[in-house]
Image (cartoon, rainbow, N blue to C red; front, side, top):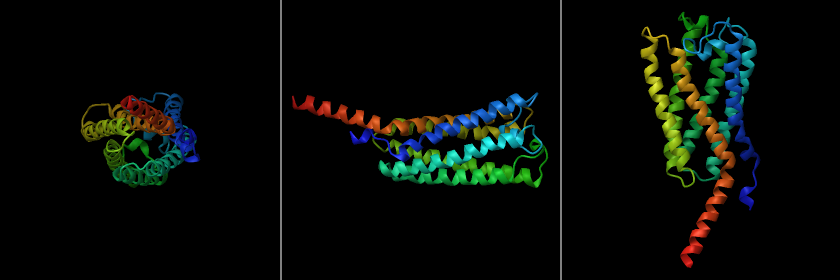
Length: 231
């Protein structure tokens, strides 16, 4: 059936999964190359901050991640329109595009300085961009989750999206308390937030790539139900 044929946009959905793999590679490689780096105490941003070991090399990974993630967000919007997903989800996809543009440009211009321990202008801008990106991410996930829940064939991924959004919100709320306390776990909390988002991207990427097959199976299932009713 024609629905099984994948368009260029359908194939482009894999850019999301690929971007996640690149992001994870930069985290793993950066921590291995940095002797004494702690995933629990240190943030991911420190790996590409000014003065960090191998920061320039790792920034190549983060730029690649950002470009692929931006392509993925555009693909999500295009496919949401193609499959007539509820309008709220389409607006959420647009907000996701804006978030990735801000992230790609903002973090590129203002990498973390001195591990973030000193409130320089660069660190202030980095934190401000982080706040904007977090708010846009949460808004995009809730909008998409709500819209997907209202759309046939997307309700399962809609529930998953909302669950990820709730985890990210809780982690985001806890972050200021951890940073202002004596708990040495900012890196661990940040990873809960970021890796939840990366998991969402990976799952949505694979889901959208397989969507024609999923919809084809749904059509066949509905057809069998109709035949059974006629009998």
